[in-house]
Length: 64
Image (cartoon, rainbow, N blue to C red; front, side):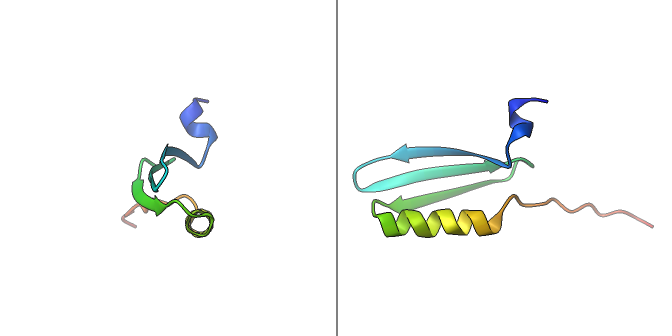
């Protein structure tokens, strides 16, 4: 098992005094980018949204 397979997502966070730039890469390779204000409320909202979203699932189109 590689480190990539151990987590549902990896988060890159550029922490600054006014805003935070974030990249989330999910296990399936999908990425999302965010800019978060430097407030506890904004960070809490973003973390809750990330938790609710979970890792996206790629769908397979299988012929029957």
